[in-house]
Amino acid sequence: MPIHDWTRVEPGIFHHFHLEWIASIANKLNSGMLPADFYALAEQITGGLGPDVVTLQSPRNGGTTPSSPSAAVATADAPPQTWYQTRAEIDVYASKAKIIAIHHTSDHRVIAVIEIVSPGNKNRVPALRRFVEKAAEFIWAGVHLLVIDLFPPSVRDPEGIHKLIWDEVTEKPFNLPPDKPLTVASYVGGPIPEAYVEPCAVGSPLPNAPLFLSSREYVPVPLESTYQSAWNNVPAFWRDTLSRSSESR
Image (cartoon, rainbow, N blue to C red):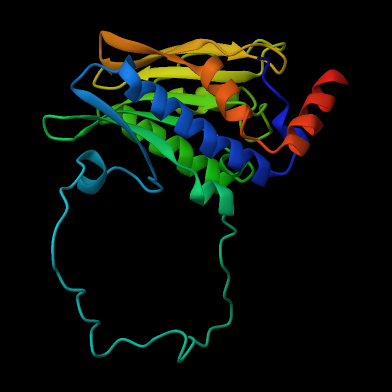
């Protein structure tokens, strides 16, 4: 199935597709594609790496919520009186986006991560910086990474998302082919990172992308068939809208 032009619809439509695609990929990986010692989970990791991210914690019973310091003041009761107050605009769909984390059964640590880029990851400089820094943090921590970006470059990422991520790792030239502005990039995490990049375009099929489980072992993720499965669960109205826009190109 050809890649659709997701810039033609609202971010919420892609968010729905994003969740369906995440589920489709995770289900495919858990249906015999991953070795027996690995499993995939759809998870939400919005910040950087930490003990709670690197290792899946076992369920705990009981526990109490720490009490607030007695001197603390609730902002709802007494808002701070300052000359200037502002709040960052956070894309609601980017903040709700999920990743696929591949865990190892021995200690449930995260071995690899699959990220699907959303419009909210790229429409503001701070959001893009957070995404890129998180990706680089995964790579340097030895977590292998697969990034799928179905949105064209902007003034914030003129050579696509891979160039920004890779600039955090090493200074090597990279230019996207002008006729293939979309990106599927696989990274080997660790002290000597490697990148495998496949440029794509609207109207072209998706490749099978390598998802590394070690520096020398990977499974080919069937992006094309899982995209099709997720597409089938997009409401018919929006499938027709996207199909018509693709035909008019």
